[in-house]
Image (cartoon, rainbow, N blue to C red; front, side):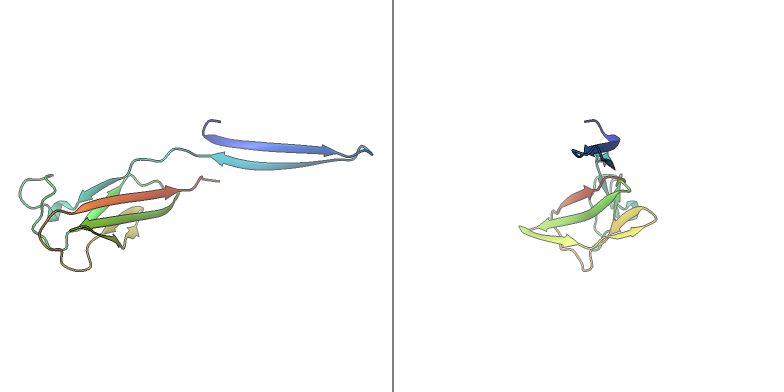
Length: 119
């Protein structure tokens, strides 16, 4: 079935001819926007857009997050250690910054988004 709203109707009739009907409205939503993660431009040191910073607690913004999400997480991996970071949602925008200074090095940030169908 394609994404969209549907109505399921079930009708039952007993041996005496009595009928009853039940309906259920439901939505199929298999589409999820692809989220993007960006380093705040104020924290992007050097060449703009190179995602290199000398800021120890850089800020990040998550964009393209659907309004019907049930869960959004960001996982940070550095030196083989994974840690989920707390997110703040304000005005439909998701943001986070480390709660303590990050050491020099490469970091892998993974965004996970789960949505629920709009009813």
